[in-house]
Image 1 (cartoon, rainbow, N blue to C red):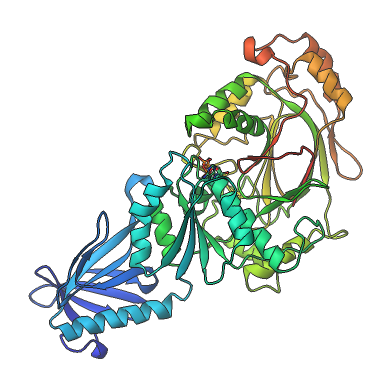
Image 2 (image 1 turned 90 degrees about the horizontal axis):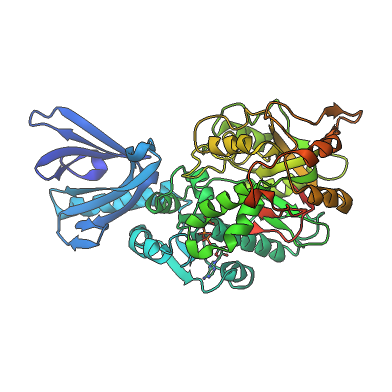
Length: 547
Ligand SMILES: Nc1ncnc2c1ncn2[C@@H]1O[C@H](COP(=O)(O)OP(=O)(O)OP(=O)(O)O)[C@@H](O)[C@H]1O
């Protein structure tokens, strides 16, 4: 097998070890052979995961170095690393330097590998528009991109146009207004807030080009032709964590390079007269809204601001009244308690796509069909609940992050057209602390008597009328529950199937006489309403409809 590459495997050397290398349609394999021509270890790399092929002896990270020799070539590929307990989710740049018997053979190898790459990886991007938020997370966005990501893009032959943002919403406005011709995708170097900017920009731009008004609730939105790549450089990076499984710029860059993609459910959030917003990770009211509002005052603290604000808001011991209505998803397909974990290639998501969008072959028609599901008359039975909540959250993905490895809803699906609605009823502060604490462990946060979780297709929320709130403000925001096991509201099922928590008012009297849990922060009057945290942005309205 020493001869011409076209006639089969050929001999290559790595140092003084001899290898038999072969390029079959989808794989590049090299097997070490001993002096008696017996096979030893084989390494097989899918062609789709070859990052680049270079003549000579080349090194890329941490710094580029090239030794331009005649008979050598270097192959860079995706190498799965199991360090850090991430079981292969962490990707590294693998590198192997081969020596050939002749320059002719070397040129054949590089030519064949490059051709195979083009043939077997048609979805790789060639030109990317990169937005760096220099102030996200620990303010290392620029450094992360230039030292870890740009060299990989260059190796993979990707040209990138880089914009370092100078203000919030610059990336969104650029995507809405500037010429995007020639770009195969956009890349966000930042956190979830930055991702949200790009998401809004791309969805808005696509509707503009299609002549649609995205604020029109009846509009069937068009799909975005460009993908969004995320290089994590924010504080929580939850969208990156939930989709890739690790927060690591090199892993994310490699996914972008090989053209990986993961569809995501996007939830539209609107108030009758206001501009539509989109959420993929957390739409939260009560605790989550209050923490965001508090943390915005302390941006200078960096990622620490969330710990600080979380503590302050927890100690202020607030709960809020409201009416939540939701449209349940089909319980036979999946459930938020079924202990599944959605990853790329998830069978529930692929089956949902087939079922929900039978005539679509791409994510394109997926989006418009999604909206047509909610046209009048096609809706199922809405369920209505009313009462006081510590928090209400809706998430279209697990929303896991380094702090909460399983996330807000561990079994939520990334792309099945549903979201998980978590209702945390008002409870004793220690009960709520237990709920919050369980997010940081593997304990089931839904296995608490004051917590409900529902897989839903749509949600409506309205804050109560002013009178009830006045009553509440006089009380000073004390919890109506004496024990986490003893709920003081009653669930009834009305004829149309909607549940109402009717005994809410009965609690009021006891609230008036209850002893405060802590003095100071928690004895302060609660505000009448909280705010909605929509993927890290405060919504300027309280009553919302989400689909
Ligand atoms: N140059 C800039 N100056 C000020 N704000 C910016 C700039 N560029 C982007 N932003 C805004 O900063 C906000 C936060 O950015 P980002 O999400 O990158 O970091 P983070 O908040 O630290 O991380 P995370 O959202 O993951 O918690 C975003 O909403 C974005 O709109």
